[in-house]
Length: 112
Length: 117
Image (cartoon, each protein chain N blue to C red):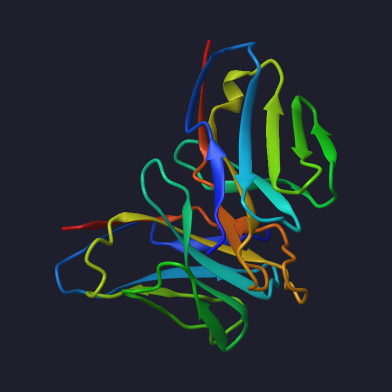
């Protein structure tokens, strides 16, 4: 089945440093979604990207969808302790309607 | 207040026992999903349902069963055939997706942590 690979698996930063996580697929994605899961919590939808080369911003978070629609990234500027958690990307799960395939996630730790 | 309710929050299963995890949503969503999450890993799809009275196997359906008799409810049974059931189980729902390869944002419940006694 379709796979979405996400790197790095772990990232430790000092508060105020930037952070980036990358998502790659071997096939073209019609769309990609990003979720955040706080420790002990459940995933929360952040954003969906649909267009080739699309860039969307949410305050300090910048999301990009590659020109070939095979990769995506999430960049956080000047991390804060509230940014800790696991960030997942998710792409369409093959031909099935509505099905998502999640990446392994990047666990972000922010040291104060 | 709309949302997804999963119960119980914690569940313990004895050897040879079937257990059922509850998932109820009042978001009027057509689609519902069950995921399994193991420590340090992503979400793996167990079963999903796009409409009442219909559901499909996900990537790791063996040892699990579901039903979708009502739009609001999508219970998951972990059967005794599932030899390694200890995990965090997440239920999600989304609006319907009538177009192939399209996706809607998924809304998740708080999850159920299942352990073996």
